[in-house]
Image 1 (tube, rainbow, N blue to C red):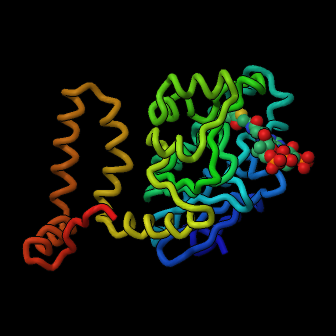
Image 2: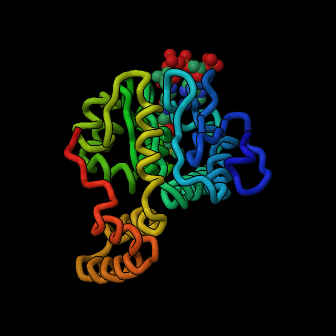
Length: 268
Ligand code: 1HE
């Protein structure tokens, strides 16, 4: 089934399942018996998937099979690692989650049940997060005697703030789906069971954008946000010049001016 989702005939590990719905790919974390804890196979599969997306795929939805998004890193795989092995393993997580963040297309996650540790780090590397009300967010690293290793120090602190990440890690407390939405971590909050439908709807909207606009949103925006103001504004000017010059932009602008394009909607 993964053939039509990937550019080449590559096999994903059994802990992942990919399906194609039109021009949207859905990547399922498929390890229900371990609450979708991310082991080495799943991590390599995620990297393989995002590095080899079929050009016909215009957006990706990541979801968890069962009642949870992910229970985080497979703790069994850290038990025997020394310091150097642990650091190198973390770099593999960085590389895999960078493939997600800097994907060729928008990535939307459906969050439900446990979204903890590396599960939260995976979610933070995606572009749009949709939380069902059953979702809860936690970083039990302090309790387990470990630390963030999947990019959370960079991404989660930017999304939730250093103070909240410190609190979650130090106390082991969890945030509710409502808290996560209020803090801006999830952009959408939906009823239990409604996450996938909402994610597919959001993915369709994103997929309908001009490809070069999505490229700039994914590749340029987070980098510009990290620059100093002068470099950032200059880079923004260069990126906007390139994006607006594309034939697709000209077609879309003309369609609006000739009253053939949708207007901006009021919030629903
Ligand atoms: C696991 C894992 C895991 C479950 N690694 N095996 N993450 C954590 O510290 C979260 C640990 N997990 C839990 O607290 C609970 O499992 C849950 C709250 C997520 C779900 O509870 P529940 O009652 O539905 O399931 P369960 O009975 O606890 O777990 C089912 C099985 O999954 C069980 O195995 P079994 O062989 O006894 O059936 C669990 O041992 C197994 N399991 N979670 C390994 N995480 C890149 S650095 C990031 C650092 C982190 O991610 S720290 C966070 C780690």
